[in-house]
Length: 116
Image (cartoon, rainbow, N blue to C red; front, side, top):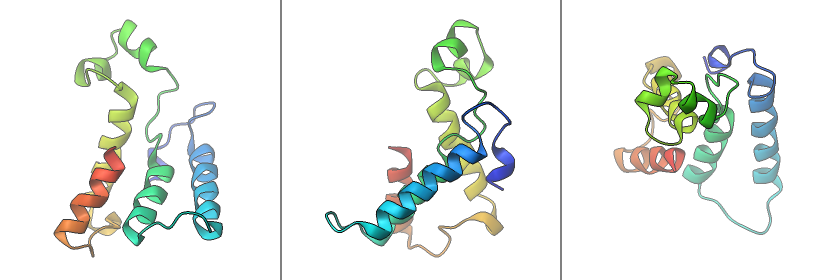
């Protein structure tokens, strides 16, 4: 599950992700200025709950300078790319794929929004 993929670090943890997702939910429910499509709302909410998956508690700079294996995997935005890849791994599990009911076009659009 998403919660199990958060480490017990001081800040980028499950509680932080839940707070960010809760804030986004409140913004989306009370928003009267901008209108978002259902796919945009889905992408925003999933992005919030998954935005720090498997965070190690270190900055990208530290990861690069210390020669961490993730720095060799991702040439830039080390942790951000890792968080996205962790999200994809979760969504590939049939029982956890919130996007399974989307059309192929909507699926690609939502995944693109998640990545960017």
